[in-house]
Amino acid sequence: MMILRYSLLTLAVATWLSAMFIGCTGENRQERTPTLPEDDITKLAALPTEVPTPADNPPSPQKIALGRLLFFDPILSGHKDVACATCHHPEFGFAESLEISIGVNGRGMGSKRDFVTPIGDIPFVKRNSQTILNAAFNGLTLNGSADAAHAPMFWDLRVKSLENQSLEPIKSFEEMRGHRYATEVALDSVVNRLKKIAEYSRLFQEAFTASDAINSQNLARAIAAYERTLVGGNSRFDQYMRGDRNALSVNEIDGMQVFLKSGCAKCHNGPMLSDYKVHALGVPDNEKLLKSDAGVDNQYKFRTPSLRNLRFTGPYMHSGKLKTLEQVLEFYEDLAGDKIRNPLVGKEHIDPIIETLKVDFKDISLIVEFLNTLNDDQFDKTIPKRVPSGLPVGGNLN
Image (tube, helix red, strand yellow):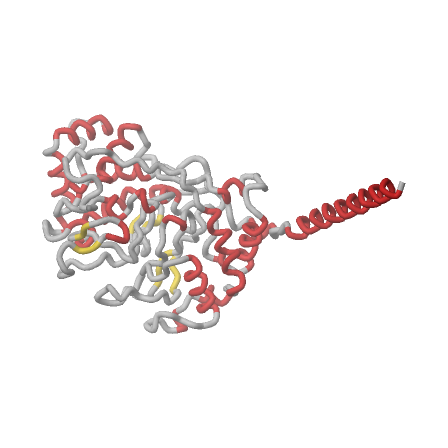
């Protein structure tokens, strides 16, 4: 009887403790489920499932296949040693792991890339190589409107559309052109090279249904058509914003809340988490440059980058001087405390929007957890086995 009473008492206590544990756990989970104010959460959005496309460049399998080959073919560079993929390689999220790029006279890939001969009159590329991933959505607004023909490109917004973006490096001395020809004849020189390759003549004709299809305009259209297939739009953040409330952990939702309350979304908003405006923040220069990079209108202004796929695309900022997301947030914490890291930028030049920024060191890890929900590694990483020129795929990467 005593054993039975003891057993019943033990069972009762265990049941009570179990109920208390479950109740407390449930209550704790309820308390730890953050609520995001409606006016804050609406500053963010998932990527759409359809990519904006300009009316004069509809995609086709032939055009995309041609664009992929051109993207990886160093025939587009003056010395036939640099391809678009050299600085925008799928292994690095279509960016690279260098602070600032090495184009002409370079050898190797990612952090192992260096100059073939000691740096001379061909310098480093001036800025960090931005990823091509999701660049098809550049300019996309919160209401879902986008104008692919006028999408903002580059750190300084110097051109609009992926078509125009694709031609700029070909004309750039340090990126792809080198000493082979002058800027004004760079595109014609590349077009003439392509015309001498029978396989390209056939591929251009198939893609554009014209016998004289090889020209700079169609070169740009083919590369842009391929770049619009480089999309990572199903991150856990996207899943959450589309209604799957189990896609993010409690800490990640906390991080989103802190991200919004800290004022980060003043600039990093919309589906691409960018306002596509230029801001002066006093980002430190890269010491590898021969002179300071003063940005837009010589006011040290640079475009707000997207926050998508940051896991694959460091180092960060236009100068590549911040290697980790923690360092980026520490930079903003300093900036919010009036500590400007670039001595050439006075406080009066810093964008006034920074006055609303409230980044606290204790919140950094939570914000990083949220930022990591914006990663999606299910993008096309296909590298062609060969290119029509017969040159090394991707340029001088070995």
